Image (cartoon, rainbow, N blue to C red; front, side, top):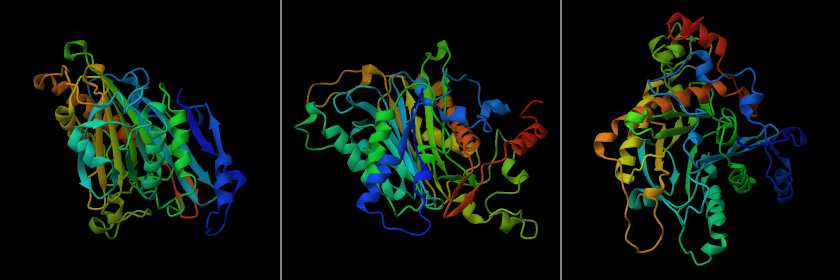
Length: 410
């Protein structure tokens, strides 16, 4: 079961802008409480997509319907929630449980729209491999998180002579709910998320890097899903995890949920006299998403680049148009031992899936990405901070729309 780190916000409740002192930083470390309970069990009023009858595609999910269904993959969260100011955190994805610097996995990155920051991107594109875990966090946190991630690798005794490390850190901007310029203890949150990383069920919604995020004008968060290919297609596993913080015109399995609920991008432009009560202006189209794709199919970076590009198709199905202000990034990697690489000059021998066998993997990525995004939205809980309140989407109303359009069953 995934361990989730949560802060005890009742201990500190600042009511006005503050400069966090060293003492406060130390206190923040004490605020982090380790919980072995999965948040999906705690959020009893929230439901994953399948509980609402939303099951995109033709392939079946794995045991947990999560990225951790890909053998070896682990996920960890550290949530920073303090007083009425901090609503942020870190989520880590570990491709395997070993030393990633010594046993690197092939990887590729695809950019849907580049209004964002992705630390370590150019080296992954150039060399086609990961040598650290992947971390997700807030926009202004990536440098501190990247430094902490690099230190976590360099501190390993076998890496005492390493003089270059490429931490990979993605972000979305949670500045609406989070006082994002205040970043005390975010490096410690990275270390906590790494320590908490585990296989099995993954906490979703307002947790870790999804604590302060917003989707389609409702509360967003972390979501995940997986697919298992039929034996005839190789039986490989594909898993996706998203950090959702974007907008557009929400649709669920083709049903125009955003329009039916009166909250969608450009509403005031197309219906100036009939706009709903929400903040339904063009800005509901902005925002960002980080998508992490894992598979145990033996793939090298060239085909992983093709895999990453297909995730954008799953994103589009949910109603995003990758607006000007959106940073849409996909990181894809293979965990297959046959394609892993060790540092050094020894020749690399690997066996890769053929191009003709890629279509089923592409289909699985599209399906799992779409469902992971729904899970991020449906599992998120209402969040309040100094910046205001962002409500969770009303699942009862969503179900009404789905029933009306024949998606859900009574």
